[in-house]
Image 1 (spheres, rainbow, N blue to C red):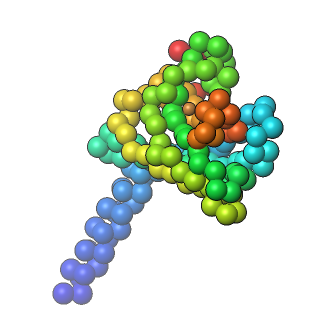
Image 2 (image 1 turned 120 degrees about the vertical axis):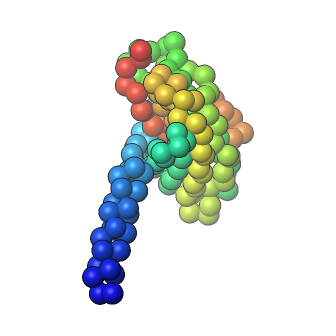
Length: 148
Ligand SMILES: [Cu+2]
């Protein structure tokens, strides 16, 4: 009986470590764009790839305008730059649910999508926009640094 419990414990531990490896998250840093909007804005995007081909991305932001609503997207590498995804002006490939910054300027949002939608140039960068003025983009997380 004692021996059987030990064996079960070893099996459980190895299953646990296999899961941890499969779901190893990748953390990307947001950088501030050359805009006076939300000068203290910063944060991370945590990208978790799952075995079923789905990807969950969670944005965690600070330094936003309290009470303001934000829109965030994955963008494809656009035509305006081949080396700076955040300046390339690419089309939206995946949208995050909008979120509103709390009283301390913090906000978070999360989306799950098929990996194929953000593979290669389709997932070049993540933008966070002012919800009421999409041309205002305080921060961007570059993902793919070179087009193609
Ligand atoms: Cu966008």
